[in-house]
Amino acid sequence: MSALQKGLAKAGLAKATLHLFLCIGPDCCASSEGEALWEFAKKRVRDLPLMRTKAGCFRICTGGPWLVVYPEGIWYGGVTPERFERIVSEHLEGGRPVEEWVVAKNALGCGV
Ligand code: FES
Image (cartoon, rainbow, N blue to C red; front, side, top):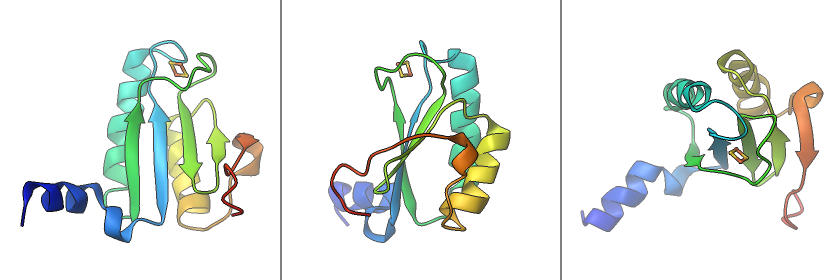
């Protein structure tokens, strides 16, 4: 297996049904808060068929940490490990966004 194939396999591209982007600060939240959430999120979704990406900034820069779920384009602000756990259970695994925490929706024309 080539280095490229290994990288794609490690990223989970072939089996992914969702892609999570998580902004971990430093302007929308404290970097320590964002890093703690990122570490929690990595472990929590390890066995799920999705990709995850740590983002540096979504240009919102307040009200974070931010989580966006594609292809649905569901945006959650103020994500804590406790909230992330519920988002995983109800949205990522259960298929129903946690509407009370959804700040914005934009599927970028994907028609989801
Ligand atoms: S630092 Fe998170 S949106 Fe800018």
